[in-house]
Amino acid sequence: MDRKHSNYEVQIIGKPLRCPHCDSAIFSHREVYLDIVSPNVDVDPFNEDPPEQLVLQSFTCNDCYNIQQFQQLTKGMETNIVCKQVD
Ligand SMILES: [Zn+2]
Image (cartoon, rainbow, N blue to C red; front, side, top):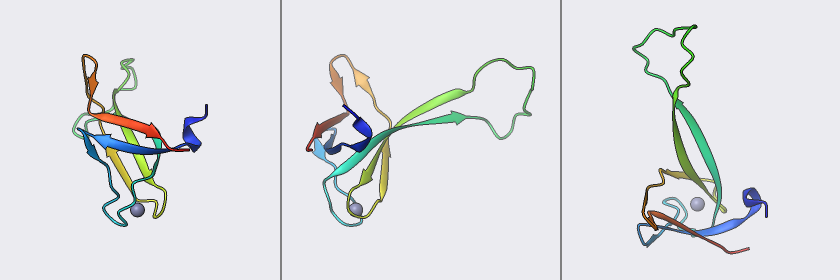
């Protein structure tokens, strides 16, 4: 299954996700990885530590392409984000 081209209905903490612009409820999903680098620290070229990474679940509205992003939190079997494939 190629998740990149699938469409989803999404629930965040049990509430259906809606596009704030056009009110659509169908989204495509991808994961976004952000490297967190403090702007106040000089970049050390000899520092081998990988930067801290933030993983975001990104949902793109199928109608107007507005993007909403959430950080997934998992507690035991429970998660704040639930996706249901619709095509
Ligand atoms: Zn929209």
